[in-house]
Length: 569
Ligand code: ATP
Ligand code: MG
Image (tube, rainbow, N blue to C red; front, side, top):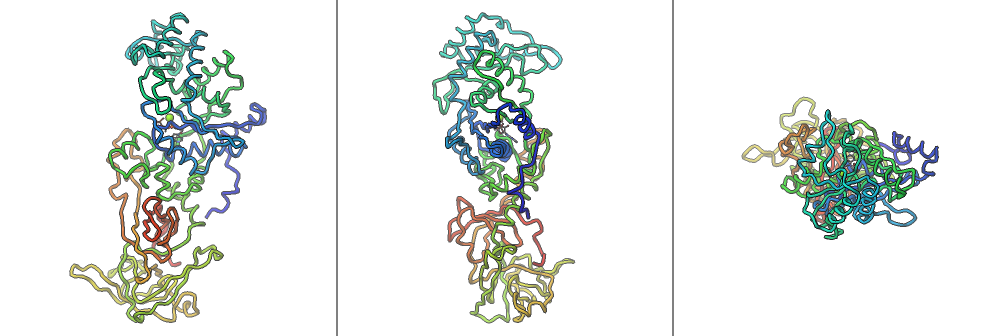
């Protein structure tokens, strides 16, 4: 159990150290403004949660603000559906983007006019040119790691010609690919990103926000740094693959500062390692494939590491924040084991979740010496460590549901549960002694028989006279509430399903979803959607937020308990 995390100071990391230094030198005054910049071309996943917790978390703890900015400059792949889902997911994770009561919600596409204007300015200052090489020529002339690039034969066009061509590109006079606008930097730079990168291309594509207004669209590298500067971002945190792009980020902002557009200091890009989680896929493209080919039941399938998926699975925002705190922020790429994620959920819910009994694979237990038609009340704490949360009450009677594997006619060594002649405690009830079982013609157990000891009831003095090693849960047949329970397991059988470019579909776990008809302790049938419980001895479960209805519950298993079976309570 973790009781300290809410008031514990955020763990230090190299990014906080940079901010602390900046605050010491007064580089930004004491201002800290970050941004989370998703492209609305898919649903957010657990990797994004790391970036969200970092960006919003840093802003929050320094009294700053984190902008939510949609980096939407790829018209073909983006949509409002994704925007809406991203907004909902970030909110659900527990973050907001307001400053002095004003929403700090931005769209890179709102900067199209400015971005275009700055591109013309770069042309006028001799820092950009229209290139009319074919894509193949451009590729061939880029050079290699050992060879410098070859300047395009269009590189020395005059400012007038460049401006004229760029304006005509914008006016739709050319076909896609006929011309591009390139920054004029250095064709022999060791860093490829500096070999005159393309900053604008022609696309006759409908944009979900700007419609058909534009047929030239800015490239990511050009857009991102300018968006940061326009929004007065101080620290622009991104993943390591952008490290090689940082010189370009700085070059563009520096050129625009030289031109008098931006004032210094300019936003600083800082890279951190991305989250790789075992048994999960965190590539939007591959997630899309899992959804569109029907390997899972939609974006919010509880087996997916999408934020909507882990939410539906039953993970809490607090458990995700705790997970992100625990994995920390470094510059070293590594894999985090799924058990760390699951552990954070257990540590969050252990203290919160009410306990209840649920029999997931029911078989009948008949107490032969218990009078028919009689019920007797039993009670148990709602939470074993929080007596103030009260008790739950449920009846015991002659016929109960127990787990099928709590009976074993030929028990292996160390099996302490039901077999003929053995005694166990019915949790919060009586000690019973097993007699045997009825079987059908195929040898399947249809009912287990036992006798109970009337002076052994939990909570009475006699209880202590019985020493038994097994302790099993149960629900009374008469009071049990039937429920559909979805037992989810990891989606992949292998820790790194897509390692080395392998076909990740081959690693799909065929047993990742099992649906059972369970019996729940009375009370759980009224669970509201997203209400969570610990089903004793089984793990943590949540009432499905889509399909569960009070009176007709559907539960998802979030995670099992670490040590589930056979432990006396
Ligand atoms: P794409 O391949 O579509 O670019 P992406 O995962 O980079 O996918 P973005 O929407 O561009 O998606 O990401 C938004 C932010 O989340 C970026 O700053 C990105 O660096 C960060 N991010 C994405 N994936 C991870 C991850 N696995 N770990 C940490 N941060 C991530
Ligand atoms: Mg990206």
